Image (cartoon, rainbow, N blue to C red; front, side):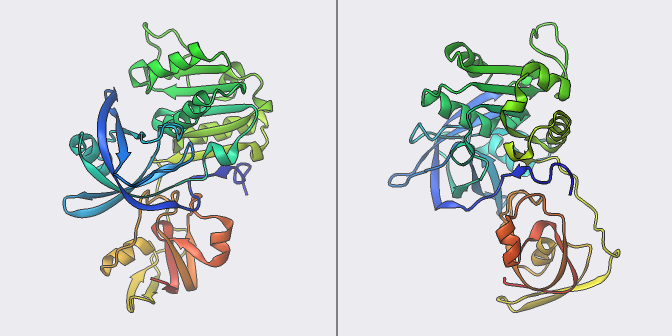
Length: 351
């Protein structure tokens, strides 16, 4: 077990609410490659969530169902105004479709709201929020909630961006710092620029201690792409912060881990409820195998984080590279994540 395996990788929790429909009311161009989509629930429906949680969008792209999780950037203190803030990712199926197709009046289905990385469940007296790039979205939901509620806690926020033109919510962050004396907000740009007068560099131990000298007295809430999170984990470990006071959510940019079992050994998967059996190789994931036999399993991140593709394993041995998408209770009950689990020999699933 490495030093940070006990950090709260909080992307998954019990889902709340059921499927319902949102209507896009407005689209806001935040930066050159980031848009905020402003939704309200369709008449008679309600979207209740906790600051920091995410929603699963049910999209249809080129005639095929696509499910993706996006953090909510708006606060629950503003009923009827639910927002997601999406960065266009080169080659990204869902992000490009949203940027190019979703407009005012569009309707979109969502499948509940969830996520253990939220302020309600993880509140503290002295929070330090850390975010990199579009990882600011769940953190912004928390900051907006605290501001709306007139919170008088000593709040520190450090956001990392590639350059000044990549700072999401820049004007609002400046307003929060100006209007709330207890909000200590720092924006860090990786690239030095003549027009940028703020801190420059990458997040490391010395930068965290400079911008948050009392960090050892705080609880940390960090969100960003995996390379950023890796740097944060290393810095916090060097500082010696108690892992129990560190909460994180990673997304995207993960490297697909290679199998560690005997290469390309024969295996088989039986889908019990569907009555389908399939001969395969141990290099394939359960999700790939299901798709090969025409079975649809819900999936979103496909990286072992979100928990969407959770399935119950009835028998057999598997190899998994779960990255936080399953709780200890899930594992004890026999659940695995289809996107990052490979069969070793004969495996039976409750599908």
